[in-house]
Length: 217
Figure 1: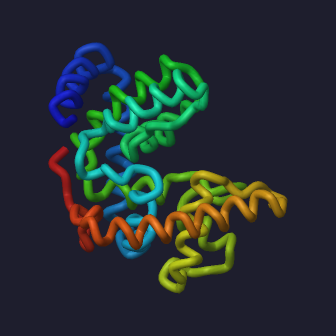
Figure 2: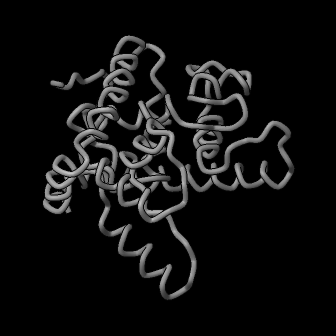
């Protein structure tokens, strides 16, 4: 899996160098901001829940999860049911670049650039940075803003509060939330907590660190 990603990274540097240089500047600024405000870093639990819900093989790949890609293609062909295969690196690329068009070209581009992300940001810092940048709903751009909108301080969040916030990455909260969307968030939060209990036993989070790591850029 990592060997394939390394080949893709070489190709991406060759054919997408200009785009990568622009993206890397944005990533560098995001990482510097993260280091300068490490006291406001999303909690370790929030990062673990993100990994469980979005990319549980996070520490086993270099930006592309081939298992998830193959499963998504198979289910799309056999069941005609679209399924995401985005890694945390791919989601960071999407948020930073601001490109959300639903096209195959965008997805391929995103996968290629994702293999280069850890050249700028250490792998273990990516979950926290994605939480800082992610869209949680109306007026909820980033983890701190999402906490403020629900009337909580990051350090006072309960596990349920944290799971409900991370769930909003999949189900962003609109300005006027419906009972249906609230139920989606609650169901997703319970699912994340169940996944967390399982993944803790399987050492899924061993790569996370408590203190910031500094990349050589």
